[in-house]
Length: 163
Ligand code: SF4
Ligand code: SF4
Image (cartoon, rainbow, N blue to C red; front, side, top):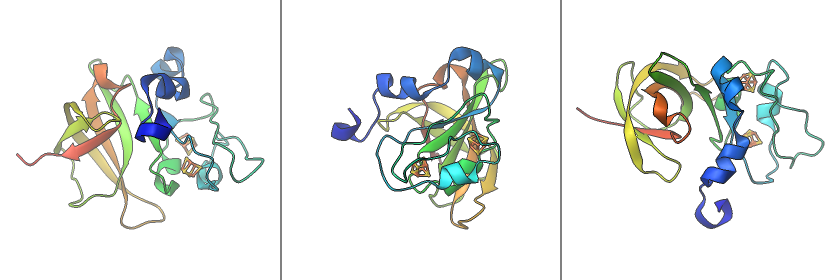
């Protein structure tokens, strides 16, 4: 489906997610990078060796979920905005999503946002919890967004809402 639509299907993205046991353990990165492009900064940026060494520059990144702590370092170096972090059990009712965000204006804590699916449909509302600067790109931010827990698999992006 990705080659036709530019979006991963539910079968495709489910295959890239850790199992429920790992999702229940704590924050973890999910890498949705299905194209064999010559690129590897995510692997080099991981301080825990959770992204396996590449044999070729065009290898797809493979993450060992048991080594990942969801720090988000890899998010800020990915030129394809292909990586995000999910903390499924942020609170009893909510999950936390850390996503790359390069739009203006820069969001602020407690801003309200629409939660978007991979296809760009609005599937709910979220709240900005924190905004981190990118380490290497002053224009980008990693935005932490609290979302309803029922959306932790479908949520993939956000759009800030003026209220
Ligand atoms: S979130 Fe942190 S630990 Fe996990 S893969 Fe990315 S850089 Fe490595
Ligand atoms: S940095 Fe991003 S685009 Fe490059 S290989 Fe890693 S996930 Fe894919």
